[in-house]
Image (cartoon, rainbow, N blue to C red; front, top):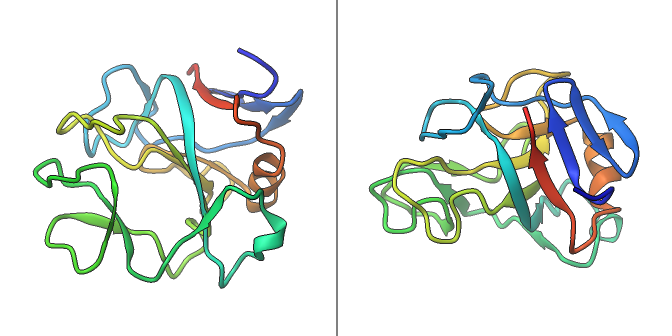
Length: 167
């Protein structure tokens, strides 16, 4: 591990020497992730992309590698779908999550390489880092921070930064 890694434990997260409160999945931590279990997968995960809502977050406030979330962007969470655990677009006949939500949870998303790019069916999808619903309110398996903390973190990420989930 390096100081550039976001290290998540049962007590919160650390990044660049700072401690942050965070939320994890309602199912706790797991070494055997399954679709729908609500657990956060243990391990070292690369940060693959930074997605943002351009109607809610100014482009200039983010690093140059941030990609806007378009109105029809979805994330496939259906193990039967040919593009399971990948970004896709509406209309989409399989189960999915809309990335443009009415609430602010997905205004800023770091996608990870959990079960990606070659997804094993049923091993879990959409393990993101995003804004929390309320302080430490459980997620469906993601890691979540306050919006202010998440913005602070993404502005300081390096290409070497990883999400390290230790439990």
